[in-house]
Amino acid sequence: MAVYNPAPPPAPYSGGRGPGPSLRLTHADRDQVAELLRTAYADGRLDEEEFDDRLGKAMTAKVQGDLEPLLVDLAVAPAQAPGMPANSAEPTREERLWAMGGHLSGYFTLAIGPLVVLLAKGGTSHYVRRQAFEAINYQLNFLIACVLLPVLAILVLPIIAFVFMFFGWLVLPLVAGLATALGANWRYPLTYRLIKDPKAPKTARPGACRQ
Image (cartoon, rainbow, N blue to C red):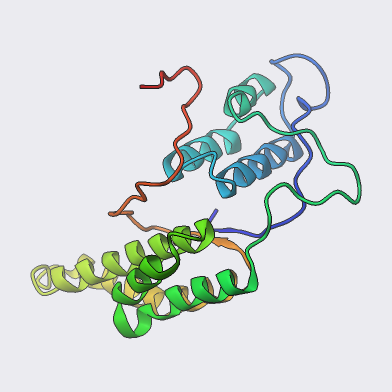
């Protein structure tokens, strides 16, 4: 769930192997809907909370009727004919370099480097903006953990947790940099997103009312 690798648009969900909302699902059915949800998130039709919520429901769905509400408001486009270009363009080389720089700059500046990337390119590139917010939130999580560690040093569990977090801080920004260099839609695992993107598109959940 952390990394989305751009690929040709997935085939639209066909309702499984036949009619009937009570028909049991296969792993292929769940994977197909999960891929459609990832595409919708990458296109900006789902925000982070909606994507996490729907993906979790898709992975635990039992019958076709559980999957249909997850896609009803996404207006999934029909499959494209061979040779047609994808609807959502992959990030350009410049966008990938800026996103990679935002992640890797955290090693030297914590959240300041990604913030600079956000201010420099966040207004012109949705991809760079999304990745900059990911890097900022991850570095803020690590910074807060460093501040709280002396306070909680008398407890063993927080120290053990910090060791794992520090190891993750050494590895994950590098993985994020490599992923974004390939144009992937990276998301840090186990990260509380303190700062939300105010320009992130909002999509109403099925049955929700728009205000």
